[in-house]
Image (cartoon, rainbow, N blue to C red):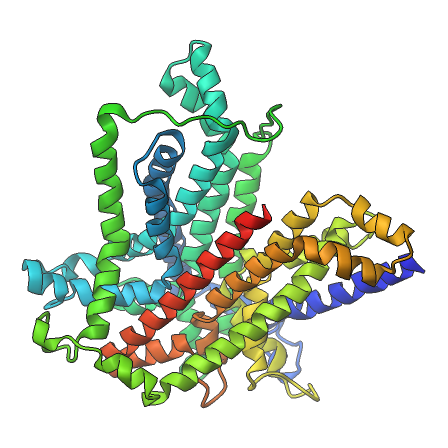
Length: 552
């Protein structure tokens, strides 16, 4: 009976994941192969595909997207690897403060960061007014766009490197020094190989985040002469006539780019996995920086100023400036835009309420599916274990705009008797599909640390499977699940691209509100809302990190 219940549970979880993740991806492939599929016809197979591939601009879009992703990954590596190694291997003054500062760019939504840089560096921008330097000639270039995105994504490399090198790698590097290796040899032959999987995984994430980003290329790319797949996909769906086949084709190319880089990363790691016999990481005091103390601190300070100081200063100035034409002056500063937000002007409170409600629903749904998928994936006796694990983590390699296109193709069909398309639930589905890997990874890590004998003992003493899970397993993994829910809540409350694609008529979220305010020229209102969203995200992320540490 227990095995039957487990099979039913695994089948139900697999069905839910197929509906949430598999169906949108399948619809994109169908629409790309059969251009008339949305009209119920399977004729002209591959003709639309061939027609789209024959267009030179398609290959130009793919090339620019690939070049942008590789450039952002390279710049993120150039910034994150040296800083992460310095943080892990040396006694860095104010180490926790630097960690907190470098967490902020990752929490600041990229589109808000791009808008902040625009306010700072455009002609007659804040930097021009204060320092007399017009940075628009630099900002509105492909390199400027790549650097802005890199300053937003390098923390994923920094934290991966610092955490991976601070454990056994630092200790074994010291052992290598004792055995006669030079500092360079110890780093190149011991510390770096041990950190290589984490480095490559973080670079893959930086690449994926950059090629799926919509806000930065949409805000800066037009003036920079940069065209990427995400912006082209959105235009094919928003401009008349709507080109579903073209959007599906470009989405398929974007997804294949992400999966190809993932496969390359796996191939690079093949045969390069290293194991130590230390068990738990050995505590080892970091080395002294010596004469390099002040140069290293200067590099950290300049990085923090570029990644945090400038965009946050522009964000606050934009929110506090009564008028854009008033410039940087004490008499032009005030809390007028925040008062307008609190009074509900321009639908601000409705947008905030919609985002909070959608984020809460997404956190609950992803937690439910994530825990179910992680539990069944841990059970080696279940044939679906590997399938569930792979399907639940697939969204990590699927760009957000691809998910949005897939959901449109999946649910905007006349043959459905009941569809979530055109309702708020379609946004919950899109956010849940994108963020499902968070609870799966968090719950899976907590389950691997938990002894299976605890639940088995409860079963021996008469508890049912549900009782054992509810009273034994769930309390053990709950801190990690709650941390994942807070992370999902914070990220989904500011998600932009799928909100723009899927939001029903008359519905606005925080991200849509900010984006529309800038389009309409109401910069102060948009930046005030961005400040509120960033403060909420930062608070929730810090709470999630604290809960994760307690769970560990």
